[in-house]
Length: 262
Image (cartoon, rainbow, N blue to C red; front, side):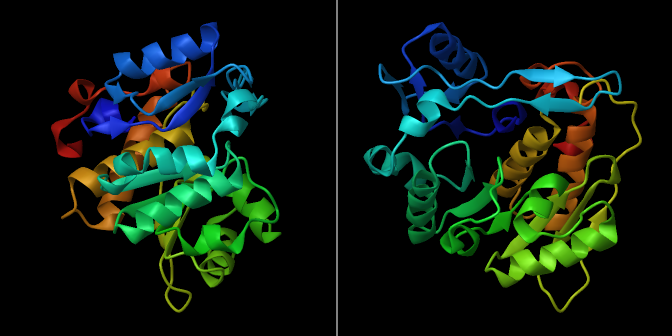
């Protein structure tokens, strides 16, 4: 998503030496993503995530991690330069936790802004993952798993955000689907609720990825933009993505967006 908006984007990853891996690498290239730091391995097949979508556009995803789990902290150190020269680093939990931890440590040591999307969520995370996150961005389900609280309304998201801030995150953004998202930077101040645009969803798969990728674009390429505005724009782009079928195929290109978003 960040690349489609015009950000110079690179991927650090590991895929299998199979048709899926080759397709993923080509897809990255087609979308303008630097793949110099994507490795191939014979030790595992490429990670995949089959998706089922119901008639309301809601999705269920089965994750088969495969080669994702073969990406190690040592691999990250081997490609350290691409992290140290970045403006924003996005990490997630579809790799080994220590792999994301190493990437976050390197980023923080070099003043790179960090975003952690804790998906798939685990009830117990290494405490350092929270502390190394400038922006900690779970969805409502992930926030529930991480805090043990229900997160079905904005008020509940506020309570969950407080728990996550207490764990050491600098800022917490909880995405809430059709309710938009909640951003909170301090336990002593009320969070900011950014409502979502009203749309008729076709397929919600990838909405969170569209949001996080868009947010990273704004944080990297529009540093003068207030965080609330960046979140509003990211929500707008995410709402566009759910109106088309597919995951990456639903992500809009820069040329198809209104100028005020750019």
